Length: 276
Image: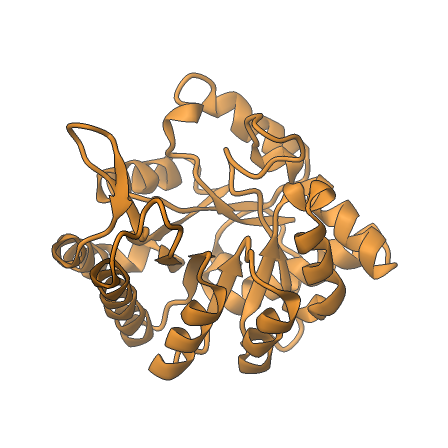
């Protein structure tokens, strides 16, 4: 299985990361796509992928919610913050499998004005343009902004993207499916009616698996980790009324279709017929 979205550079894993990775490997996780939220995490993500080339595949991107270094208060990203990110990605693009975590987050406690929304759109637009220039897929966040995110990506001509932990309506998600976007399912699907509806409606050939570790675990407010990906897989199989193995194989094939570089990362990825 492939976990297409995890935050292993987060402080939550500072004390036992090697054990977390060992449990993932024991749980038949072939590859973990690791994403940062902040520019300060970029070097750590790359270093982690260098140390664990058989398991970790890195993305780089600037999240729409940032935090002030002095106060650690969360806030909407600013336009100025994307410039060093673009430079970093251009310099290191050969080492990464995609650009992310990027996107829009219109949660009211972060977005205080239309200017905040405009800044987020600008930051996403610049990173999406770079992704298309480099031929890399996007790993996309869209909290409280499902339809605006899809509309912006479509208007830019983005064709290769995964909507991670999409929190919008399944009918809205289908607008992304029609473009060719994928939707990834975290272990929190076992306790989320919204995620279950999403799984029911989105075709299996447009689904991926993720953990969003350390968030979105099967039990609320407990640390999540990649070995829990099996929970996502089993719940998708239950909802779709297909076998665990079918979900495992299809989502792995989907992952390599979206992230072609995964064919050169990880352990024993299943062959993908007609992979692009």
